[in-house]
Image (cartoon, rainbow, N blue to C red; front, side, top):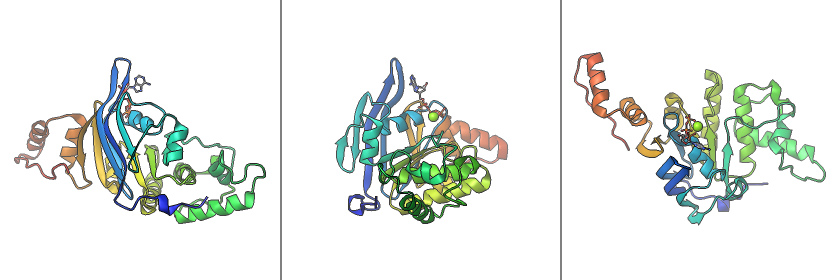
Length: 273
Ligand SMILES: Nc1ncnc2c1ncn2[C@@H]1O[C@H](COP(=O)(O)OP(=O)(O)OP(=O)(O)O)[C@@H](O)[C@H]1O
Ligand SMILES: [Mg+2]
């Protein structure tokens, strides 16, 4: 199960490009004409208010929902992600918010569940070695790979779920709210892990409501609002611009509020990238 580096796009090359992706649920337009690009070795944060379409977009890329229109280009070819299996086979892995781990099984069993190294005779030793190697590469702090999931912290569980998705050698990994419900130290651990994943040359899409986390780890911040693209920012874009883009407040309204607070005329800085 070694990584086939030949298949991996060069750092900075586009892995994924969405053009004009729309998704309707009956009369509800969840996504309208979405454009999104993810490069190898890049972390893209997908942000937006509740109902902005983030999860729907992730589900389209995970092969759970079929887009109503638009094209998905993956490693230079147009693809149809007709099922979750197809998305995984191409190299698009998803860590959903519920993590889908088995509490009573240990770390090794959870890592290999469903893709055991030799299905007819479980090679426990080989799987344990592979588990340790991967966790060490990710600088993960897991006390023992024979520990049941139930005894791990939230951050450690997130680590196991991310490591599990890496075993399939994906080119893109999508994380839905990986730091929600984590404490400060555990959040830092997961953000470090995301950096390790980026160093491996993967493209990462992260959904988060936490702007601090987003700024700490993302190379680009893509804002969705009411199912549409509403701006692309960098981590050093101003908070006002980012918040205005997420909430739909006009820049003037935000500036007026800042002027009222500070008494000084507000100059907008940090234009969208
Ligand atoms: N299966 C579905 N059937 C009908 N409408 C749906 C379905 N899934 C999502 N929607 C609608 O699509 C829109 C986008 O929802 P989505 O869950 O993608 O938003 P989100 O950005 O993930 O929000 P949150 O931050 O609350 O998770 C919402 O109006 C939602 O009601
Ligand atoms: Mg959601």
